[in-house]
Amino acid sequence: MKFVDEATIIVEAGKGGHGCLSFRREKYVPKGGPDGGDGGDGGSVYLEADSALNTLIDYRFQRKHKAQNGEPGAGRNCTGNKGEDLVLPVPVGTTVVDMDTHEVLGDLTKEGQRLKVAQGGFHGLGNTRFKSSVNRAPRQTSKGSEGETRNLRLELKVLADVGLLGMPNAGKSTFIRSVSAAKPKVADYPFTTLVPNLGVVSVQAHQSFVIADIPGLIEGAAEGAGLGIRFLKHLVRTRLLLHLVDVAPYDGSSPVEAVKAIAHELEKFSETLASRPRWLVLNKVDMVPEEDREAHCRAIVDELGWEGPVFRISALSGEGTKPLVQAVMRWIEEQAEQEAENPEVAEQEAARRRRMDEEARARIEADRQARRAAREADDDDDFDDDDYDVEVVYAPE
Image (cartoon, rainbow, N blue to C red; front, side, top):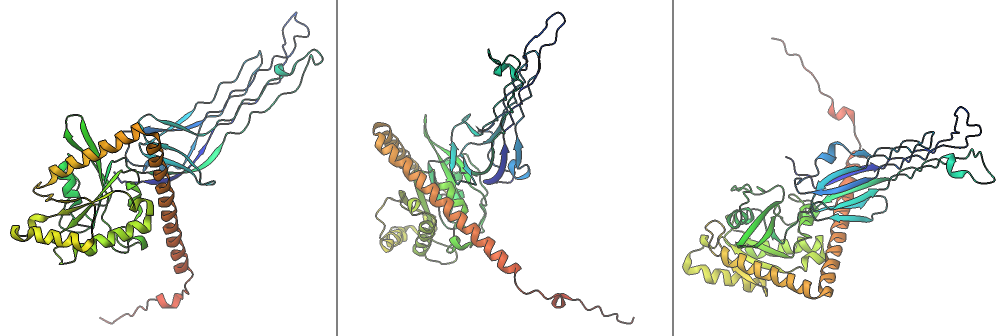
């Protein structure tokens, strides 16, 4: 199934049913009085998080969704039926944004969580409601109100504790295969990973975390090079970033320059995301002779001036992966304890995530506008049909 992490839809709630104008008509009951019933409320539209879904592809093909209208009232004080609510399932991790106001309506991060995105219209009143001591035969009714209509953008961001960063072929997919049961595609060419992959890393009984592997970045990704930077938004929910670097690239490129290029692209995408805790993971150390391994890795760290944690692993053989995942598990548990004990820490973390969301949304929208402007500029270029004429020459046999 194709991975789709953005979709725009139109949701329309149902209209409220109109009130009824009716008078009781029954043999031997003169002046029966008003008996018009109320209409029914229109159905509302809800979004519900469903863990069985992992893509928004369904909403690419059907974009307009409407709830049921309420039925009008009837005589004999009969109330119209209420319109049925419309519940749209979306993947867990979906953010809902109103495209007209740019307001974030909600974030569906838990299974079964439900969000009302369009309020159904309210019912109209029948003439029974208007009778009084001075108005015994009212002919007033009220109409049901219109339901809300909203243009929504659905944004899917995977839910993970740890995110992987790195150049294409840095070994991210091999690493996630090594430490979890996930089986992303692995091959000896760049951009093997085209969509985010998730893996659950089980450290011990009742101790596990989720790791996210996104497509690799290259220099100039913020300007659209490679697969661009739109997949970086899937790292917004992570607590920790693991920056994988190939210590022995097959093309002879510099690992130090690779790290700097990724860090630069990350800063251009979101300064808040770039300030997240980031650990350096030197991968493919088995490709360096054992006697030179220590000096080679130390030279990379010293040239970078790296002050954070550094790990040396071989994702293919599994060397060094166990100490790394154990350290990650300890760090995640410590962060969770701090947030549980101190509400201010939890609020600061929530505020950081909101800032990252805003920065990511603004950066992706700016990139989208730039591509649209480039396409329009290409369309405005002078076009001469004569340039594309084909001259047909019939050669004698």
